[in-house]
Length: 250
Image (cartoon, rainbow, N blue to C red; front, side):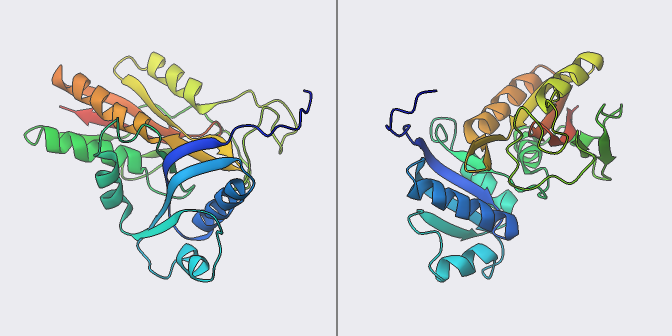
């Protein structure tokens, strides 16, 4: 590629929501600040959501870090904040992004679950365990019905952007969670979906999920549920890692 000396247009977003203000959230905010400072990113607002007023991001912000980043720290439970934010609807969320934490609960599935229960209070709505073990090298079932999966059997660094050539194996990355989920549903015809919330690297090592995609999944779930009982495979995933669950509506 010829370098013309003309910088690429910056990525432009509305609200970027970082889940958690601890070590991961602090690193993400730092990277987004660098992207803004170097002209790679524009955002109307960056929100860090954490219950702790003394979280690492709050302390760093008070110390003058994150120069140039339009940063706000909101002290709230994730579920409470996500319900208000995603409840605005598709149009309001069109340019918004979520930056998930590697260790957070499956908050997107929890939001869909709460929306479905509010929509159909008379119906049984729950998260079912997967009937078959996912075909990934590493997987663990949780007592709450969620299933955590990974194509890596090693510890990946937080700043890995999951390139086409894996930095650990040094070979071609011939795996990806979204196609795996599609095959899983094809092999389990009782399931609808999959509903995929794909965290994709956007800039300076920070992965994001389109907020409108999460909100649109609620619209799709409403249509499926209106037609009768259903079970839907829901996953918040990157190429290499993910959290899965089956949202069941009787």
